[in-house]
Length: 223
Image: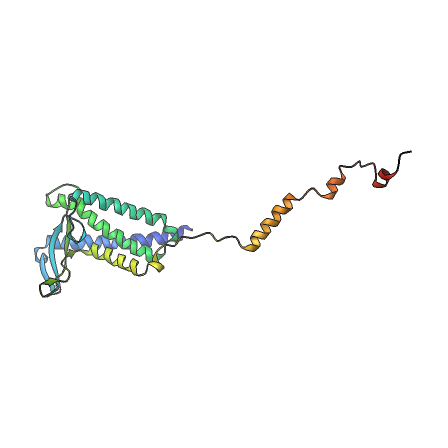
């Protein structure tokens, strides 16, 4: 594959990742440093800012310690990038854009895990809590439709996963299988093999006889 095509594919992967990472970190910084945004109704009864710090995984799951979750997140991101790089030649641009959004979201949350503990003074590297603030606070009776609080990185990851699931037959890289040889190619190769196995030509067999004696002379009785 030419370098120009490879460069375009890397651009399709890196550009959305950088956009998500920058938007995620800027939005988190604005919310956590502005107390007016900590609790703010954007659309009353539907959408609000609700600043919180999540020490666990997505959807508030906290089955493991924060450092362990941070290490798992970092290793998973490295694994995803490695797989993308290996399959880059077979990947299309839609797939790379989706994976770029996932990588950008993963890096945004990893940045929180690496540095938020130091920024707020409650821990070191890997002890950081992920900043969440977007909250769909719609309720039906006493039932919260979506009780979880999330961020821009989570939106990018979730959107990409949904797109990949819905259009995986079109977007996912396809294994390129070698086409079997056609019947014509097989017959030609067989003919070549037979040609190589043929006995020496008649001219070479004649050379084995006495060049000074003709067949007629051989048939004459001796005098």
